[in-house]
Structure formats: C-alpha cells, structure tokens
Image (tube, rainbow, N blue to C red):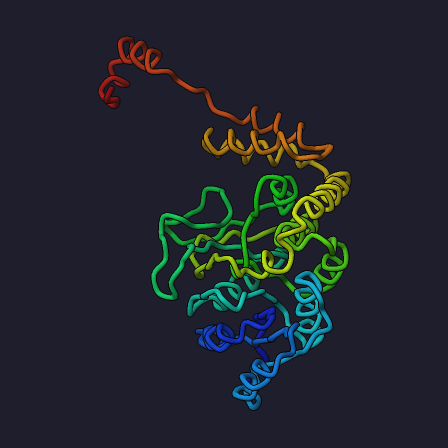
Length: 324
C-alpha cells in the first residue's frame, strides 16, 4: 500500500475515554491517512489502549516531552514530517471528522499546488451524532455552496483577521508539510496556547495562499475540558499580551493587508463588522485602531425605514420588490 500523503495528528493528554473513537474516525477514511497520537500524558491507560493498534501500520504512538499544548502540537507536526507526511492536520481527541475528511484535504493540496493551508467548516455539537446546524465555525467569507467548490485566497487575509477571531479551528485546518511549516511552528509564540489556532494560521498565511473549502468536515465539541482551557485558562491576560505583541510584529512585515481586509469587510454584514469594531476597543495593539478604521470603511450604507418609503414612492420597480 502506498504511503498516505496525509497524517492526522491527535494531540493527547490523559483523556483516554475519547481516544479510541478519535483514532477509529481517523482510520475510517475514504482516502487512507496515517494517524499519529502525540501523547503528552504517558498514562498507563493510554499505553494499554494503544496496544490495540500496535500492529496497524497506519497508527503511530509517539510519547512527547511536551508540558503544554503548544509544545505537544509542535512535536506532532515535526514527528509527522520526519515520518514523510506531505500534508498534516490536527484532530482533537474529543471531536468528530467526516468519512471524506482526508479526501478533501488531499484533493485541495493536489489541485492547488501553491496553497500552504487548507481550511473548512465545522458544526458545533454536544453529541457524537447530532450537531447544531445553525451554529457553525469556519472562515467568514462567501463560499460556493451550490457547487461545493473551494476558493483560494491570499493567505495574508488571515493576519489582520487574527485580531478579530479564529479563521478556522481544528480539525478543519491542514497544512502542506515542508520548510514553511517547519519555520512557522518555530516562529509562533510558546506561552499563549489559547491563541495557538490563530497564530499558526496567521504565520502560515503570511507565507502563501489558503484554500477555503465550503464543506462541513466535522463536529467541534466545546466543553469545559477542552485542552486549551484545561491547561491555560487562568493565564488569559498574560497570554493575550503575548499574542497581540507577536501579532503586531507579524503585521510589521506584512504588506497589502489593508486592501485585503477592506475587500473582506465589503463582503460582511454590518452587524458582524460592528461587533468586531467594538471588540477591538479593548485590544492593546498598535494595529487595533487601524484595523477598526478599515472595518468602518467597509460598512454598507444603512437605510432607514423612512428612506425606504421615499425610495418606494419614486421608484415603482423598487416598490414592487419591497414589502414595508
């Protein structure tokens, strides 16, 4: 059997009750992928579980020396690349991925040879089977849902976007392995695990294009035992400072982000832009004010009820299309 191009990395710390299901989901793919368990906890329970997969050539159990989420993720990336992976993705051990997850990642990177990053959509779920379809996460850009066709964008959009929110979350994130990824995981800051999913995307975005896939590729299960919260929730202010200081330095060497951000803002509803502008007021960053000004420039004209009435009176065609 040829070596799979994709390695699905499962960062793991003690939650053995979730791990078997995660591994089985990662193995149940229409296009085979390797599975690498980056084991931070080294518990007897995890060791016993991994014995089930000892003779499966697609499963690797790697004990890491990490003592935080950032180090464990980075260890997983490096171990996968050392094993020959062409593409790598992080899959949390408590989330769910689709049967065609690996297929979509392979197709994207095989088609768009310059793309360094792949991102897609997730639905939020509290149940392994049923998701809240109207509460999803993923890149907030227009997508071709009718034809199920990915878009390729300049990755630079993910740099200023990182000040606003997460562009995408694992498991709906994958990277092309190679020099850019190796340098990126060395460049991102260590002591802000709550923002790791933003920093890696911002750094990789500064290096090359991103594929935005319109499909829902899995369920993101949010709960009080999420790894980032469990390991680091008490250090939010300190982590935020590290994050924004690092982002400011990344922005210092980013060109053309203003035009890209403005184009994105033109595609967004005013309600979203207003929320982001309000959020930037509390951000301690040299770029917060400038980003907020660009978002304001992208806001569409707001038409009052009285203005609508006036336009209806002078435009019969508009009147026929409007209900007031």
